Length: 549
Image (cartoon, rainbow, N blue to C red):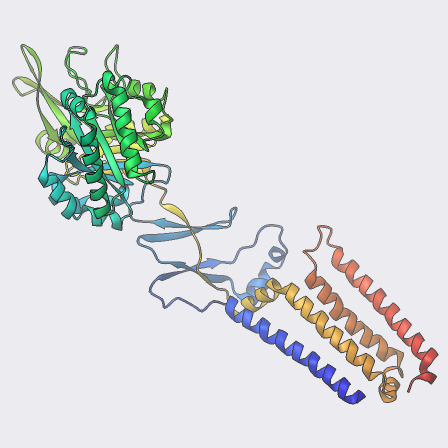
């Protein structure tokens, strides 16, 4: 019976040991991730092993590299344009450099307006540079609330601009327009038209899975302020809080035509229309379309934004700039506006690469045709003027910028280079590894260290089974004769047991203290405790050996 019980205990201990060994082996296999180098969606990066200064491994780096290799492979998810990978030692973070145009930074808004009659140009828009695109436009009928342009609605429903924007994670808004004081007054005093408009817009947004609306009301008067606020509150309730609503503000209405305190919680973004500032009666000559500064009472972006900042936080404001210019002609009777010219036509007609001039005070681009009779001047926004105004936007802490309308640039890259350099996120973005190839020997050691507490508990369980089996074995006089025959044998056995026990305690303990003496103290206490245990056991045996079976 004793032999059977003894055998069962020893078998149980061996089974526990076998289980622990298999479990650790399985963990080691899992931690050594399968080499994904052959997968089409991963990229491997070879990194030389480095250790933090002052770390224990740094002291033995040569030995470590000899055993485990000088470098290891790290795998990342392959993304479009991933060109370079770097590691920041201080933050212990990996970064990937993207060679393609980056998206706008998270805290930045870059908006563009797609004009429905520019359908042929939409495949060439730099979608990645925009956080939002406004579809221009749903022109509101003041009497019914319906759209006056059937072709615009047809384009909204069939345009590929939606699919392209969705692919590039760019939000789509439907721009609602209403121009002239008389028209706005009629609409704002016609609540039934509000109902039809909201129902129609909500349906159009849902059909195309768009994100909201962009409101462009020009000609509002201070007397309409309360009715306009009431209309905004109505359409916000109809479309819901998750729908984006942006509001364009003409410079000449910024102070008087809007109740900004009431509109602030209802509007996501306020867009200052950075165009139509030109006024030939202010200073005797036409102002630029979007002057940063101006003298006297002449309007400017600086004055408009400063007025808005009295009520609105800067992160709620963006500035919209034109991708067209205004051509002026001076006659004996004064300055006359001839027409608006797309940026592409200005580049072609006036060869602005050679003759472009930046007016210092306004920061705007200008080209003069001194050979024309009468004398002509064209004000517009080019690469350099946009660079200056984008820098000013960032200095003011504003949310971003917009460009009206897309396609007028003629795909000239300098416009988009200015946008990218000021508002795009850094090409270096944080990336997370998806796998490692450290080498099998390193992975096994790392796994043992990672699961050291589990292994320590397993060792204690094995020691427990071993000691229980030993105590039962000592009931046999033959085992006692061998075990207690030699003190050296008992000492060697005790030392082995102590070393294993100290190893288990060490694995279960936290990292060693800064003094570096905790491991030595633990070993000394283990030796002392083991010696006392062996002494007590031997003394008890010698005292009661005549009574043992």
